[in-house]
Image (tube, one colour):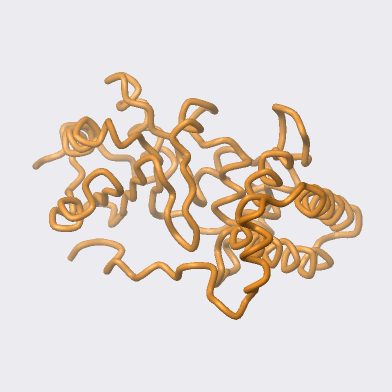
Length: 254
């Protein structure tokens, strides 16, 4: 299918175009991944935290699957047909063949090393998921790369950890972790790694990031743990508590 509109070469512009087109059709899509941090966090424009964001990651609703497919194909994106058929209702992949760009759409649930239902969070925010959910997608990564650290640092630089509607919802993360030992353990290990890397930042900046990370860890530790959490904690790390996502092939179709 030939594109009915010109697809922007800039990834963030292209993502905005998709979201606006979906909104005009009554379909809610929100950014996640590196582009979401670039859109939401002013600190991402600091050269120290710059990273390439070629591809687009979006969250949508399962009930909107067919409408989303029609919107993407109407804009000129090429579907990964077999993958989409096998994962209908869970995940969709499309390609901008001109700009060699991949569009990855998660439906209701974000599933990688851990699984989170973000359906209700799609209703909040403008263009992106809220910063709390964006941070969760990075905290859950087991085999982290430099890009995860950069995204987490800009989030902690730009947003305080809170128990209210603004900023990184430490209370929300603590409640989630209090019910799931596996999520708690992965998040804790990731936060320890962020703390270890924080001294690479400038003095006051490092202190602020470390202070906010410590605040989140304190809230996670203090939250009363469920019976299931305590039982799983007895098993501990003798049994794997996370998944490692399988590779789903080339970033862009040939």
